[in-house]
Image 1 (cartoon, one colour):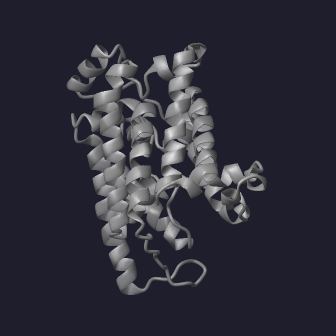
Image 2 (cartoon, helix red, strand yellow):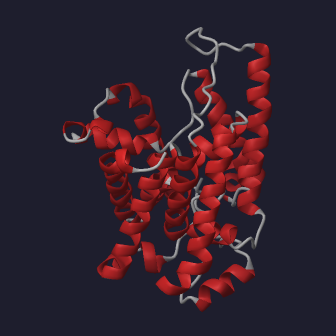
Length: 121
Length: 186
């Protein structure tokens, strides 16, 4: 994440301004490879290390949570330049500010747990 | 020689391939690639389950994912300590200009020091921005049932339409923040 700058606040800004291909290249490549890999795994009925066939879950179809939750997430992603993984990579890298972001993320997660039954899903 | 090569900024296709590889490797371990559930697990670990039902689950089955998180922290540390190059981040000129107009200087690094440096935490506004941003990420990812790893990478690889909707949501939020809220905040 560090070497490809995928955890860079500047790169996320660049992405949301559509001013470079870089981040789209990273995510696009990962998805293309992922689609091919998942297809092959399903076709060949590949088993995992425990001898179980690799299974894939279908995500449930309650649409509102994806679009509302996703938008809220996106607001934070642009503001901090980080999604959950990069928050912690950033801490390891030395950005102490990311500790504050992490505290915020845990608080936000907790808040969701508290109010979730009142939210549209 | 190889070390010098690794120290150079990595091209996007290398990163993309590595990310896909991580997702596949986790599948072979009988797991799936989804980082944000760690936030829920940590809440549960510190006792949130006693107050809120959502966190009342056996978090120990998610221990593997916590190891992944620790690995991510270590990876960040290794990259900054042993694999740094002096090559400044090759950020697009228009982004540099846009950010300058908002008062954010680009210094060639990964993150703006005025937001993420230790010294900047003395500013109440900076701390509030980081806390609020973090809360949006935490709340949003739990509400949407995943973040970029779970939806954009794993979900899309499995051709899940709900994940596409989530990713569209991510972008709507990101664009609103970047184009409408940044000029107000910065």
